[in-house]
Image (cartoon, rainbow, N blue to C red; front, side, top):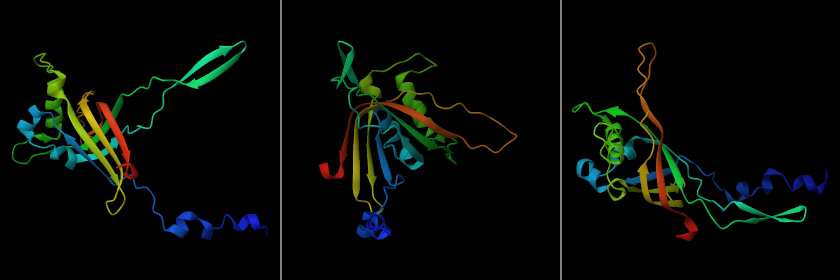
Length: 194
């Protein structure tokens, strides 16, 4: 057996020797801060936090695209200077019905938020300062130590709520999946940067 084989043995693994842990993507919390108008009706966004299943779209480590120059018959490429700073986050939520008021939540909260942007019943639209909320997302390890912190300075809904596909031939529970928010002024920090 050559010495090379021993270099790749389990006992030489960094994870094995340091007792490192995987990055668990289930260890996160997202704190959505509602626009002031919705805070008057709902208080905090606790309903959203409680019903939240998934957060997507955290592709925040971006670089500008490339630009190309021609030199005779050759191409030269460089990192460009203009970065697309838009971020689109998507959320999945379970929906329950309040046993006393018979109101589906967080469906009603998200519907009210969308109606601040545009109310299809009246044509009403409000200003961005009235429909923009905020969000923070923290990813931790199993014992709650911070790994990544994301600060979303401005967010507002940009997608429709999923249609209610009624069906009496199979069991179905309504979920809000892939609900999108347009986000601006997003900052991502690693634990060692804070």
